[in-house]
Amino acid sequence: MTGKPSVARAIRAALLTADPYTKAMAVRSLRRDHAAGRLAHVFDVAMPGRPARPARPELLPPNRMPKRGRGGSERGRIALVHSLAHIECVAIDLALDMAGRFGREQDAAFVADWLDVAADEAIHFALLARRLRTLGSEYGALPAHDGLWEAAQKTSGDLAARLAIVPMVLEARGLDITPATAERLRRMGDERTARILDRILADEIRHVRCGTTHFAQLCESRGCDPAALWKSLVEKHFNGALKPPFNDSAREAAGLPRVFYAGIAL
Image 1 (tube, helix red, strand yellow):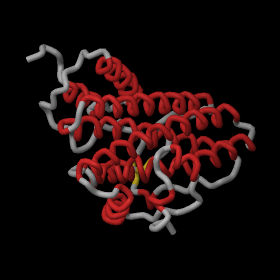
Image 2 (cartoon, one colour; image 1 turned 135 degrees about the vertical axis):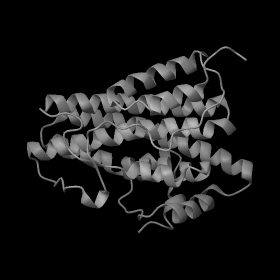
Image 3 (spheres, one colour; image 1 turned 90 degrees about the vertical axis):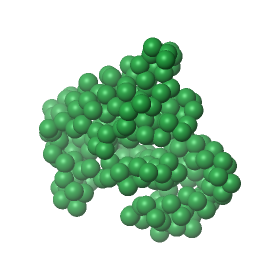
């Protein structure tokens, strides 16, 4: 026995923290403790089937979410920022679950990588939540959907599937749409929110690259072709379609070249 608390228990505690602001602070502390060697690489508890959620926002099925619209109204901008804040809040849990659920069979570097991602997502959430407050709203004021966590549930039994779907499909989609969203905000005169999205884009390239790197390592250990396995996993586990336009340069920088998605994109 090392006498140190286990990293699994620390991750589980963060996942079961309902208040998103408290969770964001806890994740950053968790990351520091792990980097400083204050947590043992021990997996002595299971991860929860679902993370704790606050009473608000109300979670709706994706097909019941109200349309935000593309106009430049204040209401539409608040709805956009709220949606982005929710994505980042759920992304904290996705990264924590990656580290806690699959870290048992991986080394400490794998856990460190995903705790780094979780800490980044916590910063993104905090920036967007603070921006919401300056716009006269707050996180939780509008409904949100739970589609991102549903993807985690579908891939909870297979690390390759989780890597293929969460960072390499869902987060990679952010690489495609974030630049255009930032530009639209700039045209509306909202430079402050656009700069937040610029930061998020730079970080998300690293997050997708984290996913592609671990996916490639997993494929090497299994003796399989990464692009071929990725395509088969996407066809099996992802219900939607991969739709252009694609930010090919950002995807290339993230280790996801066109050879992966060209054959199965619409």
